[in-house]
Length: 182
Image (cartoon, rainbow, N blue to C red; front, side):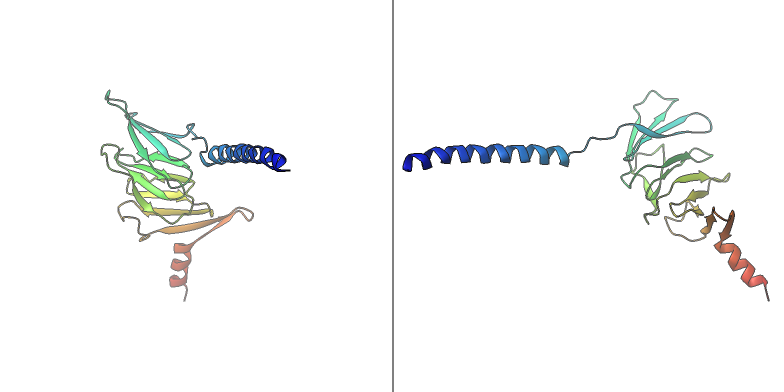
């Protein structure tokens, strides 16, 4: 009877080690997901000087096509990258993702957050003056933001699209209509 117990102990120990090793390999494989390096968005400045490309996780590469310098790398880890857009004067790159940010191509500073409200900005476009940014949120709102307000919602106009009816409601329009009606 003692002989049977001693034969089972090494077998159980080896089985447990193999089981632990398999679980560890599975755990390690699941904890390190593959990095998505595919380019999801591209922006070209109006003079073709600047080229920006970004991956889904928010790795953005800026290339000054007039110089032979290495491209500038920007990390914008604020959700899935949805859009990139250069300002008309090419001094600012708008970055639309879960949050809204901007970067200055000529500076090496990290991108500045205009909004950190997790609204999932799908699109960003500059107005002709380059001072206002038109964005569409994940909640189907069209908003304008002054890029110099450091992320404050001062002067923001919001419009919610109602696609089933084919109309839109505008928060600043309602306010104006309320003041003109007596």
